[in-house]
Amino acid sequence: MTTVTWKIKGSFFDRPRVQRSVDRAVRRELSRAGAFVRRTARSSIRPVGKRAKSKKKKGQRVGGLDPTISRPGQPPRMHTKGAKNIRTILFGYQPGPQSVVIGPVLFKSKNGVNVPQLLEHGGTGKVLATSRRKNRGGHATRRLTAARYKARPFMFPALQKEAPKFPNLFRNSIK
Image (cartoon, rainbow, N blue to C red):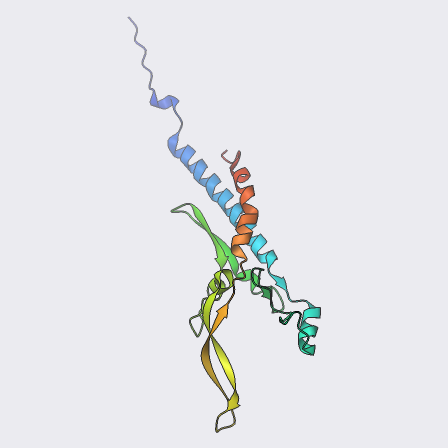
């Protein structure tokens, strides 16, 4: 009499190998999604044009508005030369929850204002204002005053624009 033994576990997937492959694919595709949103957010912030700057110098205002400032609801404008400020929009992959964080870098501010959050959602922040009156020494005085900012979102619209591409990123990604 002959007996045949067969190990069932040997005919199943190699679990650690499959898990590594899935993790690698998720990391790669989430990083691509983060890069897409970052690129769209960066490109939505346009520099102030020369015409707007010259109109501001001449004192011309379009509808009572400063031509160098973006309108509420529109992405903010870039007022500096070069791409230093849009280069601070970054993304990073978090392996623990397997997610991507995308957004501008938060810099320390002297008056505690979270500028990226004010731009995205609006709100009240403190601004250093110079008064027209001069003190006894002949210098203009400065003080912190509250200023209201209207929302000029740029991250959420970028996410909405790129979100339809996300399902296709994961199609056939596990190899």
